[in-house]
Amino acid sequence: MISSIISTLLVLLSLFILSSVWGIIHNYEIARKIGIPVIIVPISPENPIWMLTARHVMPLLKYVPFGNGNFTRFGYVGWQFDDKYRVHQELGDAVVFSTPAKNWIYLSNADTTHELIRKERQGEFARPVELLAMLDVFGPNLSTTNGADWQRQRKCTAASFNEQSNGLVWTESLRQGQQLLAYWKKGDKNKSSTMAQDARTLTLDVLVHAAFGKSFDFYGAREKKTTSRPLSYRDALAIILENAIPILIVGPENLKRLSFIPGLARLGDAALQFKKYMSDMFDENAEKAQDGTARGNLITSLVRASVDDKLISREEVIGNIFVYNFAGHDTTAHSFAFTFILLALNPDVQDWMSEEINHVINEDQTLDAKYDAFPRLVRTLAILLETLRLYDPLLSIVKGTQTQPGYLTIGSQKIIVPPDTRIILNLQALQSHPKYWGDDSLEWKPSRWIQTRPGPEPLFDRESIIELDHGAYIPWGEGNRSCPGKKFAQVEHVAVMVAMFRDHFVAPARLEGEGEEAARERTRSTLRDTGMVLLLQILHPEKAPLEWKARA
Image (tube, rainbow, N blue to C red; front, side, top):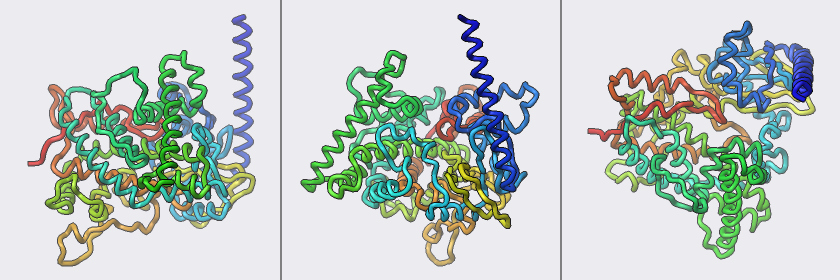
């Protein structure tokens, strides 16, 4: 019995290896005709098992003969962050990876990027929605459609992100930021940091308020208690977002059938309760839309488009609300985590930002600061822009050809992109390459975003964000597929910075027996230990507790 199982496994392994070798040979023959450098990678980046295990396996491969080759350099999800622009500096603005499944062209050229996005509008290139099909778990949505369906849903969803909703984001972010600050000031610096979990809670609370008009007071990770009572909407959504991978792979309906597996029963309950809450919120907002009492939040706009205008189905409303949460929550939370640690390591930047905040907010109480202050907080916005330049939670943007070839210009070279080819806009390379950002391109330097016009007014009133002429900065995407929540994220980040840094500063906490420089080096080491899980994130933020103090 055992021998037959082993034989079967060996046969399957042999077939997999033969299939992979044939796939690489076939794709390599196609790739070399494109006319750009080719790198062979023996495992596809789309292989789900490899996606989950590569980061753990790769360190072991350094002990085998090929351990220092292209495989260990490029063969895992997240290599772009570690490599930055190096592969493009060595081989050129476009490089094709031949894998067993497909060819992947990695691109780091601003002009070509804009050409590709323009041609996407014309239908020559498209987002490969099959890569995101799992996001349909709660209903069809913007991320998993193309063509007319995408245009219809985009029209409805984009209308949800407006100045009224941004005003809600501003006021709630100020409130949550102050509560988070008060909680962190009470923390024990000699315990593991809960900064990453708390940033997730803050972003979730802001999202829930702006999307659904529900307000919750902030509570930190050390205050959470388990309960057997039914989950609240916020708690159900938090569990879903913290366990997104099994939900996306298994699906919410199947989780209930697998409740005998430890940990999946509560996750299954959270998924089912979330869907019920969403259905109840749809009905509640549909009634309010009819009697004129609906408030201006995100779900209200979608429900109105569904009930009044018949532009979007009930299932699509629920599917898009999930994607709002999924796409907007973790990206923002990780951005906060990076920002807090970067600011702790750069006290001069904190002072630079705090001076502006106090000038703009002036004599107002922080919670009374009006949304119309946002456009004047340019230094504070520059903090986010620079953080995303080097620590973008999305390492790349994926486009591609389908059944027809595409045509691109890379510098002076024109290439034909074969059918069924992925094209990766390599954001980590594009946003850190010295040819666009100068010799200090790898330095976190928010002041690079500020320009000052001459005049008699105070310095702060003469500063503005530089409009880049090279276009090598697209953390929210560009063109039709750009993120509709771009300003939502900017307003939230700026408001939280106002709440937390107007009268306070942050520094690496010194653990028992540790000096200042040792604490800073431990924090720098924690920041360097960044990698890809579902998104780019600090892998062990608990190792870098931070200490908050009032400014003198």
